[in-house]
Image (cartoon, rainbow, N blue to C red; front, side, top):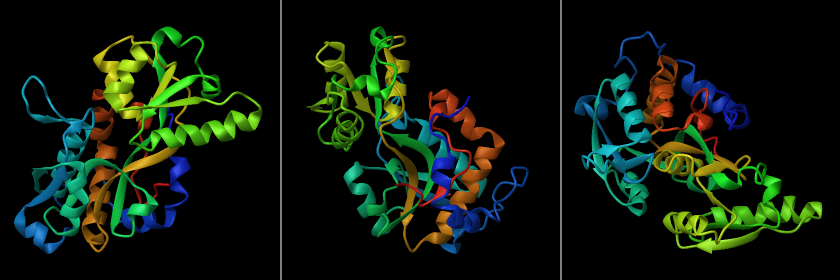
Length: 288
């Protein structure tokens, strides 16, 4: 399947960094555990990974078993297998993750966190998945809302506490008003659940959320929702490390590349409906 988020758009910015980090990457056929690790982590035999489990399909509690599940959970476990260590999970709120990393409570953030330039003063990232502000609508409107420009003049909802609302407004200013079309009427909602409800109630023509969460909604309620065009902006999810811990970052980058080569990455993408967000290889600090 051709990804709607071409990896090439993200590679140019970080080409040099990725080259040095992945040049010595272990081939997919190499034995697991042969990637060099920081001495302390190798001695411990495990990697401590911080995660919050309230964002399906990336990381959540399976309602049937109350067990930790999701794309990030499976990918981190596969990476740890390549490194030859086990995973010690530390569940916490999203707000606690960065502090826990910089104070040494955890070795790595395994939650779906965006690799943003503003975060790279303290953190460094191994990017593994494309994301962005994805418009979607009820499947019944798929015939009239096919492209992003079809949103001009429509009422579109996005959670007011996220970047999706200002991103939608900025896109409208440039692409709707700038082209002489009516502006998108952006409605702030109380969150993802409220956005979903208002869309189903007909109070919104379309909505904007992360494409991974839209994929979850589409799996949860088949034939109910449809993507509208491409994401309004594009960025990357990355595993985060303390900036001074480049040795562990580079080891995880090599392990991620190995999982992408051996098919484990593609299997997890398919399981959670994230194929359109795939990258062909990991990058380092390439988010925009």
